[in-house]
Image (cartoon, rainbow, N blue to C red; front, side, top):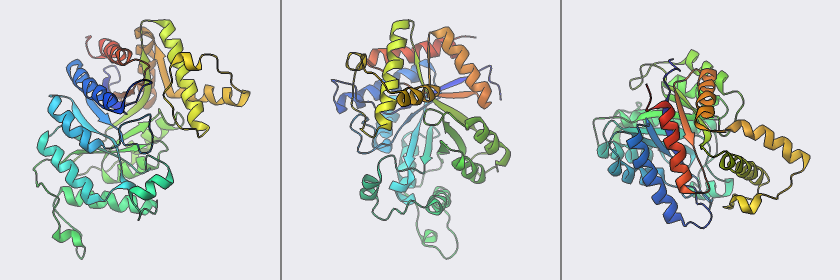
Length: 338
């Protein structure tokens, strides 16, 4: 794994900033996709969240169809489709349609969490039992639909996922604990570790995935990357304020109050208990911030730790301009130099 040459990718959740509508948030995601395509990023993934007003990204398959028409080279995909909310057949048809729109440029990233609270998840899929075995069966079914085959004695023998295109999306499993890494290894899929969700145990999970990897029809060798919150700026005061906002958001989320869009002025005088300060220090491991030179070193260290050559940056900022600038500065450090 050549970590001297790091590829950069994007996971965007369509954050609804304070004073911005959901419509604007989606348009910002589309503009960011165009921009990072031009900068030479490897892939652009969008997320699936429900019943969360601060994130507008609820239907990655719909958003990706439009992004496909607005980009040329960057891979587009889901980070991820939350499989408990969907039938395997519907996911297969959604992503076969995306392959028809952007052949050979589509990633199907999948998660086994619902991407929401249990009540909302039960409304999205009333038959959802949240069983691990159900997820495993969905992965078997997806593989069969993408290759127009079925297990003997199952209805899949008579069902074809439409449209019947010639290409298959690259399949990735998203993991924040390591268990899905074992599934990815068994099915011969890529693994994306969500360090931005869980900063502990990732390198070990990726190493175990590599050790257990079995080649598949669609992926001959293992592929792994790591996703992390990133903010890069040449303004050290902006970096400080960004970290303070991330500290507040993590605390807000862990207290179960939901994520209300805020800016620095709203939270600059907030005081935390010792317990909250302890959690803030833990959660700071989920974020990498700094000036361009600092970011380059920190991301290289992260890549070395995971032994990967691709980092997926998740960036949420007060201003959209700062979001664009952060991705531009990252590109200048990793993609535009020799």
